Length: 261
Image (cartoon, rainbow, N blue to C red; front, side):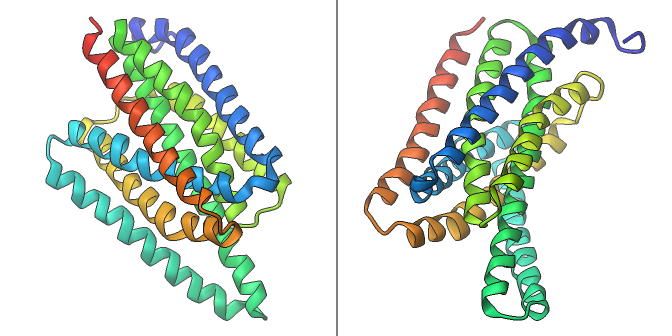
């Protein structure tokens, strides 16, 4: 602590307290999703809606603020979308040559997508921890708004990471391990954010990149899996509901933030 600037040293306690709340929130969301296995199709659909909504209504707008350019943000979003598409399909082709049967290929491919999705969610959670540290440094209403955003988003991310893993047919024990890692990620982000500052353009590029990642996984992987598991119209309602909930929350937080001192 002695090597940190005095202001950042004072922020360590509140930052860790809020990140603990984020950890518990993420674990609660994921635990709820894991316990409701019979509704896995709906859970995956809600997770897809949350990811797609977060990309459009949260990550991309935030990246524009950091980058100062919509065009640059969209370039990074396209890189994220196309980059993960390329990695996904090229890796799938490689896995196909390694497996003995088509069933094994499908299982390996789905598990690859599920774990890759969990990794992406973990990095997003890590970035949220960095944003939380920055908000606490600003103080006032901004700090409160960002703290609420991080804690509430972690609950939805807990559901989201489980939806990735369930779609990937990952065993429950493995899902719990990944959920724990994703829940811990904001704590690591907070610790790093109190020590090192990421440039605005770098953070903006990362946010836009992962927006593209979430758009690809939500639309190309989670939604088809949700419809495969459950062919009822409730899948559509659950997907739209997840996206609308994120939009409403983003608008509400924006209104509160605008009125904050």
